[in-house]
Image (cartoon, rainbow, N blue to C red; front, side, top):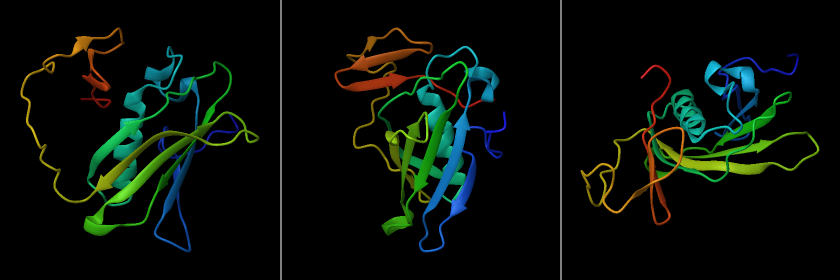
Length: 163
């Protein structure tokens, strides 16, 4: 459609702000933005992983250290979800904060959908390595991918497109 933004289908194009090292991406995500979205009613958590990884690459960070998905927006059949991804300027250790916002119309307020931390350093080692998979004490949940819940934690087997 005429409202589509070129660039990465989920991330859009970057705008590097003149007054800071912050970067903002804007995209309109339609159900037909990508083949794997066509039959989905909501934007899946895997889309936020793709957004974060692509944004990290764009700003010179090689890793997503942390990503918390707060809300999964619905994917209307005949309209778009407008997504804005904000990347903060570099902090100590090369970390950069990421926040993904969404809305359906220009008159609606932006709603936080996900937040995280991007880094260019080595991945942090976990305080406790648990080699068991699925994690001990986790119970299966009904999802499109293998997933388990343990208290407030959610575990899922996901892969980026082509992996």
